[in-house]
Image (cartoon, rainbow, N blue to C red; front, side, top):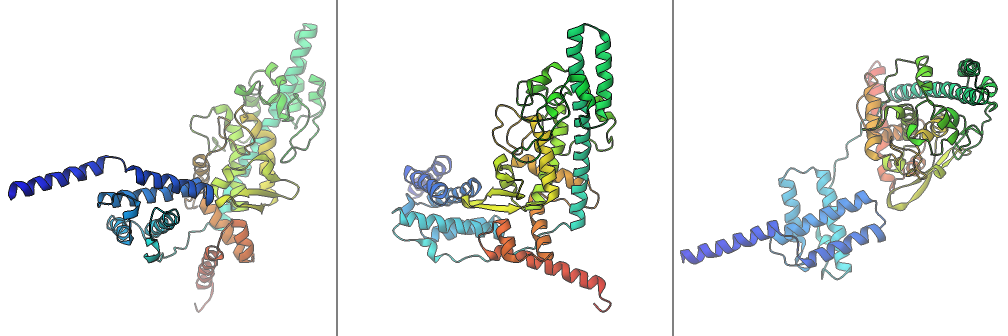
Amino acid sequence: MAPVSQAKQGTHAAQEAKREAGPLPASFRECLAAFEIFLAAERGLSPHTVRAYLGDATSLLESAWKAGATGPQDIGVGEIRAWLAKQYANGRARSTLARRAAAARTFSAFAHRRGFLAADPGLLLASLRVRRRLPHVLGADQVAAVLARAAMRAGGVTQAVTAAAGIAAARAGGTAAARAGGTAAAGTHAAGLGRAAGAGPLGPAAAEAGGVGPARPGVGAVGPAAADVGGGPVGPAAAGTHAAGLGRAAAAGPVGPAAAEAGGDGFDAAAAAGPADLGPAEGTDAGGAAAAEPAIALRDAAVLELLYATGIRVSELCGLDLADVDPARRTVRVLGKGGKQRTVPFGLPAMRAVDRWCAVGRPMLVTARTGAALLLGARGGRLSVRVARRIVHAALANIPGVPDTGPHGLRHAAATHLVEGGADLRSVQEILGHASLATTQIYTHVSAERLLGSYLRAHPRA
């Protein structure tokens, strides 16, 4: 009997090892593939939600397979509870268990409707109550300090870039005069005019130097995006941006071919007179060229202003295109969870930050792969969520006393400050894109907590 028992144990151990190492059977994989299509195409869930639910369903099927199930038809409420019990034993948080239970119910309902399961075991699964934690919210003064620093940096960069554009325009004119007359005096005269132009945003001196004429502001897709200097759609930065060393990689891009003729260090000279205590751009992308730092500083200011002004999610921010911004109405069109579209208003400070970025900063980073993206990374592609998070963390870290948080912290702050300012919950729900008003109600609790804190600090008999 002992040899037979040992043989059975060996066979069982071999089967377990095979289940541990091998892939799921074809029936499981077929069910998972159909479930993924259902989540993405029929439910229209975001890629992050699809990935999370698909991962949970895969984990459930793997657990059931290791327990002896041969196909989706063998999964019942016992298998689901056993899977959740393992998660609990491994120390998963209640919120994680609640999400995985919801994923299991979604999967079982789908599998029952498609014929993979004879009955829906998810109906017998109890819902796990999650204790809602009140989010930590930045104070209005803390957010104001962060945005003020970003605006100061962006303002200094804008002045330096316009000064550099004047110098470069004068140099371009001096070069043309030297070619025509062959005299060194022409170049000297142009340099002098460039210094005069550097004192103001492309003043009349630039017209004498290069015959360009004073810049006329045009109307771009997002805001005043400047007019006809350099032959490109960018405006005043077109003649000087490339020449100033801010966009050397984009000589043939939309910055304007006229910039290719004026080389040199115009920006370095102009920046020396600007604010020197601001340091490098906070959100500089890893591997980004130093020449892109002025554009990145303008972009970072636009990112911070938009996140707080609109309360949108960081993924929604990174998905914005130029056409999504309506400068006349000061609104932005957002594509939220489940493919739902909403329109969110924002204020003047955010509009000014977006205008500066689109008129001066964005053209420095534009490449052939840019497309219609509003916010760009250092290499010209659409801004990634990871970089956007790094921008927020870095900006908060530079203000003493401000606790660290991410883009969602600015979303919490925007919602809480709206409620504290008197906005009704229904409006805040629409701005945030919440499917349920119950989700928005957490911000009333946050405000009540802050109100209680103020009462305890101020009332003499509290």
